[in-house]
Structures are given as structure tokens and as C-alpha cells.
Image (cartoon, rainbow, N blue to C red; front, side, top):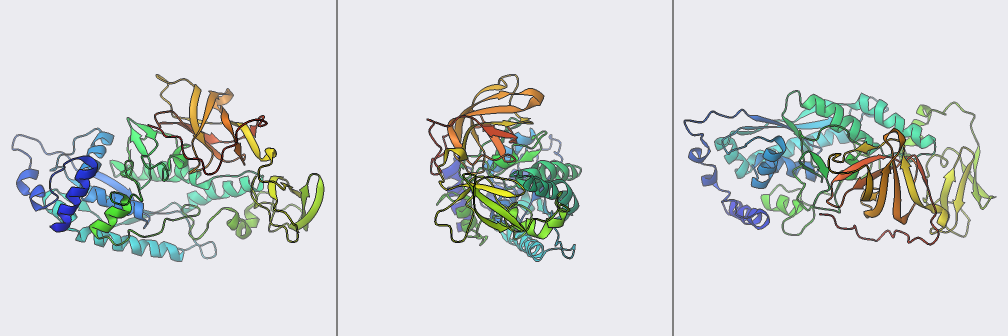
Length: 460
């Protein structure tokens, strides 16, 4: 009871008075429909669970029928959700990667599944969820597993490797979202559910993707190339801050007693256990690259100002660098950074602020437009970024032939690479769209440079 009252005070602080989170809130009398009303059908929800903090708290907010969460879900689905309406919550673990050497589960997959099983057991033991089960017809089901490993390998992973070997800088996480999580997997889940729920920090307002309240954790960058209707997708963490001391996600986990409030954030390539970046995988998959049968090159030259200053093992270096990245060269007295690369040479500069590492214009041959064409033009002012977590930079945009986009920045950006994703927002924080960068350039002399420590320009 004391913990329930503490939660009441926390929720009241964030969302106004919501009534005591206690047995009397979920009494059979208050949750029973009136004799004259027809019972509403259950709402079936698939919750993507990964064993992480964000998917856990998202499942908790639904299972405990958190007032603000249920209100937002009602708006998303455009249907009333009174206390008496049943919720059937189906956790789902998405398996997108198998051990390449055996074709079976990776040990980390098994650990994830065991963790999720333990998380569900812990959730069911909480009094606020037990009360919902008794009085609100809220059922938290066991976790199911769905494998998309084959689709991920052929549509996300191999194309990313091929792009990397072609001197591009792909983002497999955006591809995973647009092709697997919010496409193939979503379609499968909606055959049996009314909506899917994930722990992404993003928002859906009137069917449009919008930046989350937590600008530091916002993940709309990874969703901007995803096509289709967002109406059957719900993000419970849209208005939450992850690390806010007293009312954030971690603080709530601590207060409800789930015991994972201090769990580290996951890093690396989404869905590939133990890999922090795509380049670390290339060594294991050289034979899968499109140019794997080409003649082997014993050494790759490192070229500075048209002069060869060293060489490096071709198996280690040429495919592993992107523009602006530091290139190690034993014995060279200065730090050097990649400018461009080809099959035989890595061209470098010896100044991290070299103007050749900056650009002021980019183009995407194809762009996933999300704007409201009745209210917005396909040209105008915007805020944009080319990397997750990067400051939002003012820019102008215009639609090009074949539905692409041209973006001109107010400040020049460092290390803009072909293959990266560009995401644009309007001043209210709605996503205008996103696409893969196909060209970058423009004059940079006299322009202000974006500093890595710049704060995001605030959006509504």
C-alpha cells in the first residue's frame, strides 16, 4: 500500500491527480460496466520486448494501466478504454540474428529470453498489476518468440555489407526498422493484435511521427525511413525522460521494485548480439561481399596530399573507415583522418578541422516524405540531423526529381557520408521525412562549423 501511494504521488506530479493506486481504485464495482452498456471487446496488444529497460517499463505502463499511458493509447487507437475494458498484453521477442557458425541461437539470445521470462514474472508479482488482473481484466501473457533472422540477413545485413564495400556508410538500424520491425514483423503481429508497442523514445500525434520529449534519447532518427501508417503503433515512452532523477524511467523502475533501474543501455548494431559496429563484422563475412572474388591486394596505400605516407593490411583497413574517422598508422607523428577511400588507397588529411571534411549541401535520391501535404509544402525551412543524437541543425529543403530531397544547411557539417541517413523535422517537432544520402558537397568557406558539443535547438 505504501508503494502504491508513492506511485500515486509520482504520477500526480507528472500528470495531475489520477486517484490512488490502491485496491479501491480497481474495485469490482468501479470497473463493472453499467447494465445498459454493451461490453467493449478486448484490446490485443503486442509488446516488443528485448530484455532492456525501455521495453520493460513500456510493458509495465500498459499492464499497470498507467493513467496517462491508457489515455494516449485510447487516442492512438481512436477507441474508448474505460477501466472495465479488457487488455490482453502479449510480449514478443524478435529474433533477427543467429550464430553464423552454427545457425542456432547465440548465447546472448538465450540470456535475453531468460531475462524476459524473469521480467514478466516480476511484473505479475506487482500488486498494481495483480489488482488489474482481478478487477480490470488485464492479462499479461507469456512471451512468444518470432524469428526474422533469414529476412534480416538478406534484406538488411548483406545489403549493408555491400554498401560498406562500395565506400558507403550504411545504417543497418534504420533498415531494420523500416524493413523488419515496423514492416514485416508489424504485419505479422497485427494479424492477431490491434496494435504493436515498443520502447522507442518517439511519439505519434494524429498519425504523424514526432520527436519525443526526451531530446537526448529521441529515436525518431532511426524511424524516419519507415513507410506506412503509424496509426497502429504506440510508443508509451513518448513523454518520458529516461534518466530524470525523480520522475524518469529509471526512477520509476526503482520505485516499483523491478530491480533493473541501473541496467546499462544497449549499444552496437540493433539485433546483432555483441557487435558494436558494422565494420567489426566485415572480417567475419568477407566472402559475402560483392567484390570478394576480386584479386587480392596485399597492401593499401595511405595517401596524404597526393603522397603515399604508408600502407596498411588490406584485410583490415580499406572497408572499415568512413569520412572523418581517425586512421591508425604506426610511426606517423600526426593524427590522420579519412577523407575518401577506394580499392587501393585511403586518402587522409592531418587536421580534424580540414575544410574538405565539411559540407553544406546534401541530396537524397529517394526520400520518405511524412509531411502533411495539405498544410506543408515540399520545400521550406526545417531542422535536421545526419546522425542519431546529433544537434538539430537549421536548414532549407526542397523536393527534387524522383521524389528526392536537397538540403542546404545554415552551418557546415563535418563528415557527411554517402549512405548515411538524413532526417528532417518541422519547427513543431514532426518528422518531415528521411532518406539515404546520395550526394554531399557545397561551399564551406566562411561558414560556421557545427560543434560536437552544440545543444539541440529546442522544438515544440
